[in-house]
Amino acid sequence: MSYQKGPVHLRRGHVPSSTTDQRLLDSRGPTDWVHTDPWRVLRIQSEFVEGFGALSELGPAVAVFGSARTTPDDPMYEKAREVAEKLCGLGYAVITGGGPGAMEAANRGASECGGVSVGLGIELPHEQGLNEWVDLGINFRYFFVRKTMFVKYAEAFVIFPGGFGTMDELFEAMTLIQTGKVRDFPVILFGSAYWKGLVDWIRQTLLAQGKVSPDDVDLVTVTDSPEEVVRIIVDCYEHNCTSLGRPSRRHPRETSGVSTVATPGDAPRTLANAPAAQVDAPASPANTPAEPHKADGQ
Figure 1 (cartoon, rainbow, N blue to C red):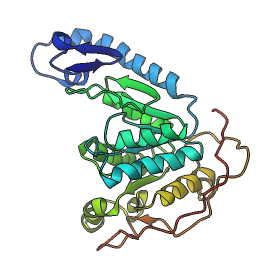
Figure 2 (figure 1 turned 120 degrees about the vertical axis):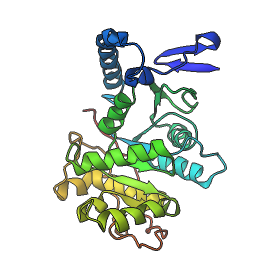
Figure 3 (figure 1 turned 60 degrees about the vertical axis):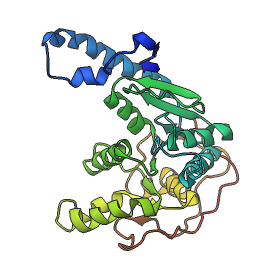
């Protein structure tokens, strides 16, 4: 068995029985752990320093989330790969959790395109390691440090079908936008059939009972079209998020070459205007820019 502990690889008898996160959060047992917390703070600080140092000059990037259990023969694997390839073609880096499944597919699409393929791994009890398509990889001990990197360096979240980890990233992004901790940026759910139950629950239960406001249901867009994913992200990054009073979360960049603003197609389907019974008809593909997006560093 291979185990990743931060930047250190361990095998056989050296594999620990618990992760760094587990030991930090465990309040049971001896209290001598209190005396080690100052050292944990330094370790946490070092992870932030490593992450900021590695990603600060990344340029515009999109985070792609999805299940580690998505197999290569699953249609969603190919869709994730296609989305990443299209984003790469416009000059966006692709950031994933670095694992297998949908994450691997997105990293593969970016890497095969010749773009920047980033994987942000995490120490887990059953370490899977970074997939072979990650070209820039960082392994973290602490989830909250890793999450900060996703939110700080991504211009958008594209979320494929997944489990608890995927849901965690989705609802954290929605909460941060809702509470104004980050400025608006696209959160796109890919695969309307998979997300239909969640969409209906948010609209018919949360909204109906007043647990969220009508504006909150507009935080997410549902689509089945890779072209629509790209159009929404490019349109927000280059135009709409500024013109609608929602400035880009990153500093403005000067672009060269042909403008990458895509021609608007059908209106994106948010949770507010998605049909309750079915949300499965993709919008018309947008025109694809002829030349890749290029941007200066921050």
